[in-house]
Image (cartoon, rainbow, N blue to C red; front, side, top):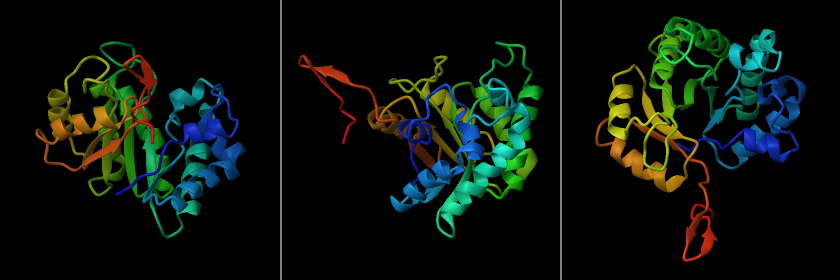
Length: 240
């Protein structure tokens, strides 16, 4: 299946600067968010992700919008559903909390799971078809997000668990491909994948190694990639 592309990039291209809370735009710029979803539908997307990557209480608090968590997540699902109509599936997008959890920080596993539950409950209540946990670099945090989905939605809700890697297929902390794949494979997720950070080449190579470890379906949502210097010239190998 073909998913949509970046939401933040599209918002930025429409003049929304990076100091804004992109998730809050579900309320203050609903037409813009809906139009982006509609553009992805026209382009052939079969899965639309809600504009909720940073819509947990912890991330919203940085903008003084923690108390809008329910309104922001509800609006996000509604906008994606209006664009999808009877076509693409609507996936609730959930990103990391943006805080350190134990043993690296003061937030406990239980507190992290509760934070994910709060957002996921609203997404599920609002009518999503699946959950995409994306851009995770900490396996402990990703595990708590996975368990939060299962506690809220039971075993029927499809869950895609995606991590972010470097050019060598390692997590930010250095965990290698085979190790993190084995760990995620043991959790109650339906699809394992990669997103963000690296381009199609590194993503494909890492996915191929992951497939040697897990028999679960794989997802790949790479960035465009970074320029590489070859024979004295700067060439972006990942550009069309």
